[in-house]
Image (cartoon, rainbow, N blue to C red; front, side, top):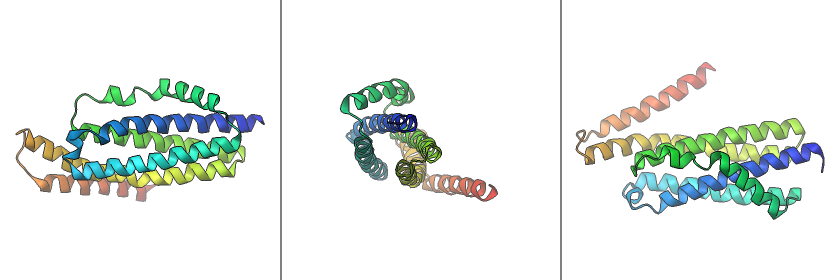
Length: 191
């Protein structure tokens, strides 16, 4: 294998480890009784997990096509997990669904930037197969970032209301969603 091929294979291995770690954390959330009380949150977590399932299978297939053996995959998973494995555990302070969604937002954003890096590296190395795979996966995540962002304000206001900390005000959540979307759109149009 060429040096470029080894570099790309290493990056794909790292991406597989990132996706597997996110999947493990998401699976814990999916079965959490508190999450099931919030239908919108549960649905977005299911969509993220479905995306992760697909990404993991495609990354494994890609690595197999590159000639990677299982021992190399296991080593890469262990190495990358050492770097990203504690992300969820460090962020999670309690079992609030809003905090789980915050962690999911961070994880999806992290995966997005990792795919951007993989896409760029593959383009620079002349590997159009991996570049296309990375770009497809990046595109899968961009609507999920917005989905989490749209659900989060409603979950926050519902949790705070249920705890008796604020009165029920669905308008606040709706306004937060509009304001967040407007901020993204404003910045997108300025650049």
